[in-house]
Image (cartoon, rainbow, N blue to C red; front, side):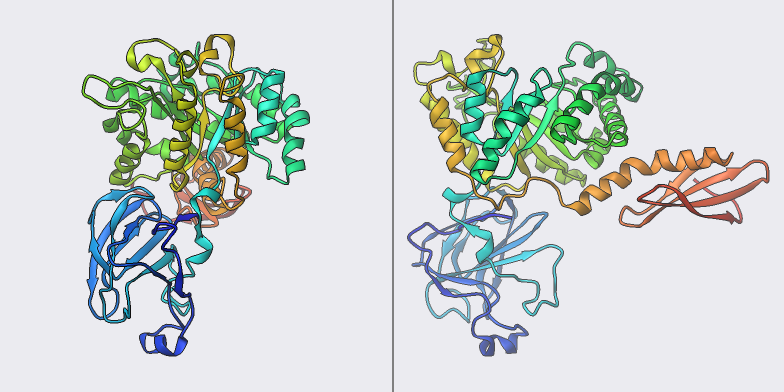
Length: 516
């Protein structure tokens, strides 16, 4: 986890490190100082180190006036404030949440106390769950870029751009030869001492997908069959085990969204049986409608990532909003995250599988930045966008549409444009090795369990001639339990399956009637 400094560069002198002065802190039940103290004059702006919910609190005998920002991964604390803002609100990394001060009984001079408490909380670590903030804090300039490549077609110019930029992730249409990527681009990462990028393919199926989605789960098998050959080839050549699902399905009604969810969840399950993780949805700008997210619980529960698209355009709309930045379609993923959080659903990491400037927002059709007189303004926008998502752990990558385009999308292609070299230099020079690229192994195991339990339990029952009723399981358990009915004996039975092999390891006759 990378955190932004909460204070400006001129106010980052640490006056008390983590773990110092154990004798002073022992009466408080601590092995030493539980955070970092950073000298700052009263009234210095304090900004959020990451995205999350702000809570403003008061502890006159210790922290004085202070604020916390809480996210799924943990909590950060900002103490001794002269003023605290945004209580109860969701903020993004870098947004103002207060001003430094000298409040609280243990403060001996104007400073900011910084605390970091990851989840799950280790209350027995000697610091009541607080950990050293220093390894989490990096200068903004050193934070890894999340801008990623998006390649439709291969050319010498595309190859040169990718070898110079060394994007942390690459999305490629399956019309590209994966051997070209393996033999010509990946060695450039090795020579530079960089980790190889996350690479995933997308097969173009836009001509058949809408009709299959309309069938819900029934259309999933045909879609899987249409892509599996290409995806298996990419795995053989490049080791790709993450793949992209359907593209820009627009659901106007609740029923449309329900069918789409059924389709997505079933495709995710089928591809998981083939050994692939999925980037689901890949929704067009403004979709799904916020009120439709409630219909996507199964997709959110089982996808490795969800893909969303965001576009802007350098023009002010009729309401006076600058379409480059805070309009309905730019950074809208934040509204989706808030909606999903309020629903209580799981939120997979997000890949913004398309970002850029799209003239269709103002009625110009598919026109891109290269039609404009100042192409460098687009580079400035990409840097701004990268800055907005760098500190947000919910976002893995943002694919620039395009970095190697077919002829009809050339106006959106950075390759061969005026910003080609400068963009590649920015991405290459923004690298830092600490940014995680995928969910933890524990979550991947949980997803595998969710995806495989039902077909495995059903299969086990059928093989024994039983009627499958339902399964009972907890994701973290090492087994799944299937409840079934043996018509030959007139008995209910329970089967226990190993979650790694999905083989039955125990069978037990149940007494009484199984309900539900």
